[in-house]
Structure formats: C-alpha cells, structure tokens
Length: 186
Length: 186
DNA sequence: CCTTAAAAGTACTAAACTGGTACTGTATAG
DNA sequence: CTATACAGTACCAGTTTAGTACTTTTAAGG
Ligand code: FES
Ligand code: FES
Image (tube, rainbow over all chains, first blue to last red; front, side, top):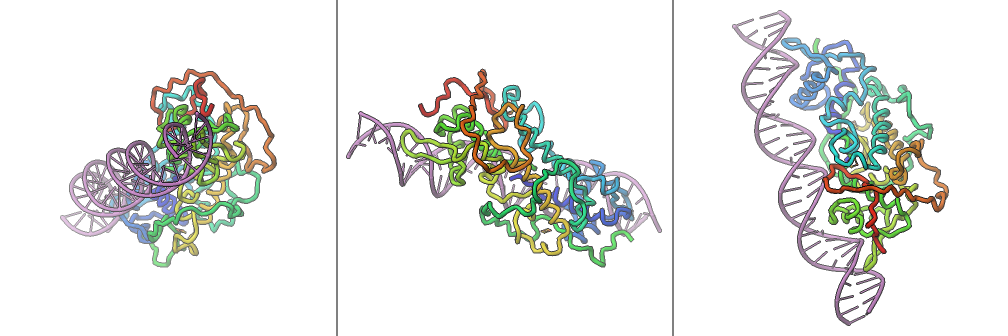
C-alpha cells in the first residue's frame, strides 16, 4: 500500500511533540494524553524507540522519556528504521540481499535499489524538528530535491480511487496545537 | 511497512517485460509463463492495468494485451496508482483530504504532504522502459519526462541470452532475461 | 454457425500482518 | 515501603493481501 504503519506514524508524532520541548522529560502517560492516543500504544512505541536509542528512558517515579539527540538530528528515516521491523525497501527483493535466488540475473533489482535510495534520501532530509514547524521554514532535504516545481501544486490529474473508507476517527495522528494543561513532568 | 504490494511489483515486472517488445501483443498466459508467475494472478493484474488504461486489451482468439503508450511514458508511479487501490501517500491522513477531522489544526500534515511529493517525484522519474534497461543508462529522470513525442522506434533489442533457471520461486518478482521460447502471439 | 482462444467480471478463502491490550517484572523517588 | 513509571512478553481480533475458482463476454477462423 506504500504506507508507513500507524505505529510509525505515531512515532513521528510523538517525537515531533517531544521536539517542541526537547529539554523536558516526557512521561508516556503525558504524551498519550496530550496526543489523544492510548497509553499502552504510546508506551509500546516509546519502548521500541528506546531500544533503537532515539529516546532514552528514566525508570521509576518521575521517570519518563527524553530525546537522546537534538531533534534536528532525528530524521523521519530514523523513525521508520526503528519502528518498521523489516529493512527499508519498496520491494521485498530489493530490501535485503539474499532473499531471492535470481538476484544474479534479475534485470530490475538494480533499478529498485536506486529508487529506494532516492526515497530514502527524501526521508532522511526531514527531521522531527522540521515536522513540528508550521511548514514555513525547513526547505526540506538539502539534496535530491528535483528542481521542478513544488509538488504541492500537483495537478489533480489523477482521479481519486476507491471510497477510501477507513472511517476511523483519527486515521493517522495529528499534532493538535499544544494544550494548556499539557504539563508532562512538572 | 513502506512496501508496495506484491501485485504492484508484479505489475511493474509485467510492464517492464512488455516494454521489451512494446509493439507486440502479449497474452496473459504467455507473460505468466515467461515470468514464472501464476496465470490467474497475471490475469488479475492485467485486468486492473487495463481498467486504468495502462494497457489495452483485445479479446477473443489471438487477443492479448498491448501497452497503451510508449513504455517511456509509463512511470512506476503510474503503476502504483493503478494497482494500489488507496490514494498515494505515506500516511492515511496525508493521502487524501477530509478523512481526518483535525486537518485544520494539524501541524504535521503539511510536512507529510511535502514528503509525499518528493517521494512521488522519484517514482515518476522512472519509467518501465528504464526498468528493463541494464541499469547503466537512465540516470534517473529528474522528474516528469518531457511529455513530448517518444523517440520513436527505439531498438529495444535488449536481448540478453540467459539460462533463466526459473526453478526457484522468487519472493518478489524478477525479470529473468527473455527466453527463446517466449513467443507470445505468433 | 460452431468451436476455440482469450479477456472480463465476480466471489471466495486461506494466510499474513497490524494494532491494540493485558499481564508480569523491574527500577527509582521520596 | 509504597507509589510511580518504564520493560518485556504474549495474546487476540480485525483487517488486508494474495491467490484461486467459476461464469460470462468477445472475437477469429474454419
Ligand atoms: S492527523 Fe489527520 S491531519 Fe493531522
Ligand atoms: S526478483 Fe529477486 S532479484 Fe529480481
């Protein structure tokens, strides 16, 4: 489906939120409350992020999570790497070597590898600090940005497909402008 | 998982194979045999591609499928659009408008839209004709190929002679160099 | 006509994956 | 010593994907 998983989406959301006050320690419960997500879910995501050293954790009373590096140094690609358990790549075959017996003769694998590379560059060019910005600044990846017109203007040439149901409340995750009662660890 | 679906992978594979002899009509059975995929599956993919006008079909005896435009004008993004039934976008929320009630206040949606744009550009920069090339040429189009006329006849005689052991089942899909007995419609 | 080849359409099922939850264990502040 | 908060594991239900089967329609050719 060419989508990141919801958990990964939550991850970027959480980190982006934390990037808003990088010095502070954030508890899982506080983040869950602030973002409108379930505590067990947030907890799960943070645990995984911790395992991949994107956040550090402090256990015990008044514990919580802290970004382990400046938010400008955490790219969306990092988040994906941490939360998606399969290696990066658009096709199974091009994601890792050795899974397919035909690698030697395959004529399209190289091309997938290159596509993967370009996509990854794009993802590496955006940090979670960029995400929290109101989109104005952060002119996006230093590299590779095709010199063409801004993709935002993409003509509506391609029709919408199916009804895109999925009527669940919040599909992905949102950063609802920080609330007053969001005090986290005080 | 940030993967395209297998069906989509098959689609690029099939189209890349057809791009090897763009003028010829290919039957679903012939393609299935040549690529080592199941006929019902190939059939399903081609039907969908037809519905999205990437290929045209001819029914009846000696029927088959034909690329509906020059292969240089069919991008990987087009294939994805055709075969993935959800609209393009890395997150559900950024893929289409109106699914999320928080669009107004969301502070990260814009950034996802931009990421989507960059990724899409990368995917649009590669045509199925590029895919069949031995990776040497085709320095990965900056973006949209000039929609001008296709450079005409373009040899397309990329006939590598290959053993094509075909025995092993492959995970994704491979282009095993075209075989001698791959005559399709004769 | 009649037969045969081939695509179109519909529907179903098994398997895999995802997302979410529960429960139990461990560390730390006060 | 107790309350708090993270860690790890396991499980389950819902969804999605991939593949198959069956029926119908179209066209060519004798
Ligand atoms: S979550 Fe839907 S727009 Fe931000
Ligand atoms: S299919 Fe695995 S390498 Fe081509």
